[in-house]
Length: 176
Image 1: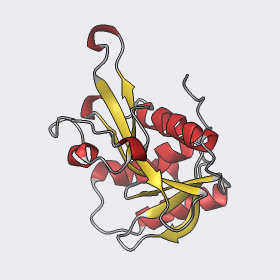
Image 2 (image 1 turned 90 degrees about the horizontal axis):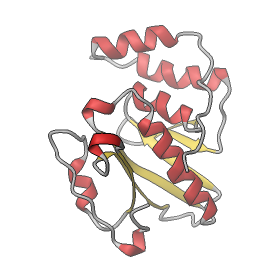
Image 3 (image 1 turned 45 degrees about the vertical axis):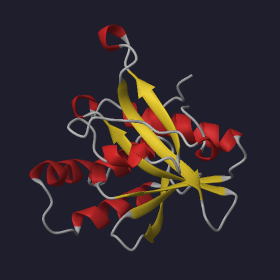
């Protein structure tokens, strides 16, 4: 944990390696980071920003999750989301929400224990909740929302095809 929203933590990430890099220099959200081990020890490989819901003090939101381009698909983002959610729950939040805009993030958040609420935000993002409905039917309903979109990249279309009829992924272990 780099800090809670009241601490005003900031984090500089290379915009060439991380999506949403500019969002992490803002000081109005809390931050958590996953760091590399081995020869890259200490370098960020993923980051997450979060804050309290403006209208519900029992709910926190994960606002941005980013994983360094060369580390995507390894489960780093899912583990970091699970870690941040556990810390938020320890801090007294009953619920943690996140809105996702692509099927890869949707699947990763399911690995972190989230479930699709059936809600969408105004900007075409699907809202997930922990704890939430992790039934196969609910999981597939969210994937169907992505399948219905125009202009999907071939990689996303292939991913969605591979997940047709699948059960939600198992929840990963919380890192220390």
